[in-house]
Length: 272
Image (cartoon, rainbow, N blue to C red):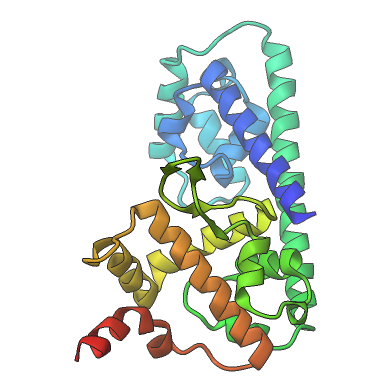
């Protein structure tokens, strides 16, 4: 349900962006986020550039003062009115355009609220599962990663080892061979698409926020023997996430950064 609500929210945002590109392309120069409160209040009264021009700077500022907004004053009002005055947006069917924007903004609010509500329910539901707190304690791992993993993997105890989870996600390594031709090995992509997506996003988050995962990602890409391309390295990190999650959820141990870095240090130990 969260995936569906998020997809609908993204769809609504894309349609809003398309609306502005047609009727008021200059709006994005004033507000980067459609959810900006001061911008939304003005759009409710004056959706189109011609409506904002009629309000003028004083009229826009009066709306903000009536709503008791902080941080929105004459300077921002002048910028918004100037953008409206110089807009190259379409002037066709203004009444339909106003209705469309109102409906799209309402849709965005509905689905954003639904996503937040579902995330709250998911957070409460996860508390019933043992050792979830140990996963959440890993820097770079959040509610969306953990809930997506649990929802797609199900009862972790039904897997005998992490390789079965890797196969379920479509991350099993298969040979790329045809007759006498032997190409590079690749992942199978045969498995649960959403689980694969969740793990891939988790790998990107960990590489960006977690020092150990960032270091091991760099090691995979720069090692002397069998260096990986960037995408291959991200997949390798995703597979490592599977193994770490499996061990924590089945044994109840804490995340161990030193043990996780074993892929880097093991060759050095063997050489010594």
